[in-house]
Image (cartoon, rainbow, N blue to C red; front, top):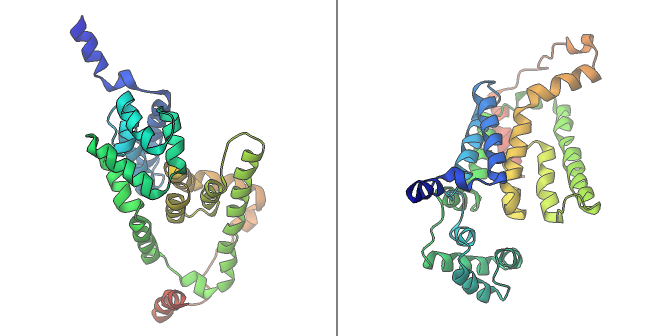
Amino acid sequence: MESLNALLQGMGLMHLGAGQAIMLLVSLLLLWLAIAKKFEPLLLLPIGFGGLLSNIPEAGMALTALESLLAHHDAGQLAVIAAKLNCAPDVHAIKEALALALPSVQGQMENLAVDMGYTPGVLALFYKVAIGSGVAPLVIFMGVGAMTDFGPLLANPRTLLLGAAAQFGIFATVLGALTLNYFGLIAFTLPQAAAIGIIGGADGPTAIYLSGKLAPELLGAIAVAAYSYMALVPLIQPPIMKALTSETERKIRMVQLRTVSKREKILFPVVLLML
């Protein structure tokens, strides 16, 4: 009986928390949308799979060495960390002290956790190398730029106003987050609200980059929210289009006003970069 109990306690499902269960369901939903419904599989498939890996109970694949230490609740080790941070030796107080600490102090605590025998998970290492350094968003920007056809924009520059309209979405989202904080519904700081606001511009790489700089603790939620709703545009757009346009207007065929030469397409991003 004791052996069976030990076996059960060693299973990850026995340590599954409510938050992990919800995120596992969300990850499975994203995988289903990507595979079965073909909704932006290049986006939703890796997000869903990453969500599954991050929320496997007791695996700690997305935890840093310091986060792994805090998750184990060892009283002696917590006391050492708390003494360095001049705070109470409990997890909540240590997390609050770390949030207010300088990056150099946070790095020292991470190194101290490594010295105590804890190691960061593979996803935490990937975040540090790719996202934390800012390399991954830049690579995504380069890929998106290489795939973008500026022909329609160069043929009809007035369409630039459509892209500029995204700024309204950004400011509306920032104000919405601050409104929630004002009424005490959800607590958001100004940097967190600014990071969330980029979602309103439907710009995934920028949302990842800015959230990594302004609100790293919200990076996962912001990335999932941004790419999920962009992937669901085929579901969101049709009812809005039907509500705002007539059937005759929707049948209008948009044609390119003129042929844009390759020289123009090459010079346009180069000139923008120089400016």
